[in-house]
Amino acid sequence: MKIERGSAINISACAPDWAVTFDLGLETGPITCPVIGWATVVEAHMVDGTTSTAIEPAFLWSDTVWTPTELREHTPGLGNVEIRAREITRA
View 1 (tube, rainbow, N blue to C red):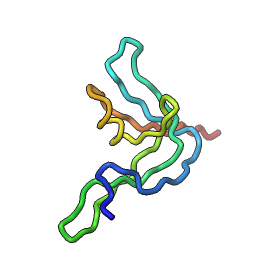
View 2: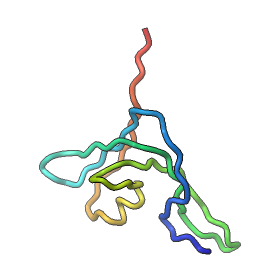
View 3: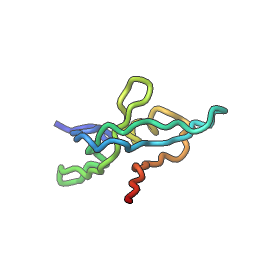
């Protein structure tokens, strides 16, 4: 079975406090969403039948789980997508 490019083939949970921020060019400014996991996403199909994959954040936006690849495909005019980790302060 040939899996479509951009498809998430698995997902793993992530530690709390990761976020994705992106800009749709709206007056409200950038949108920040919580990352709920890390997804393995198909990037390309090779001639020998194998695939090239990448690890991307899976985040919750508007009651839907997205990856940056899916968001770019469905959202024209999307600005930069930034992944932000929590800041850890040690005493």
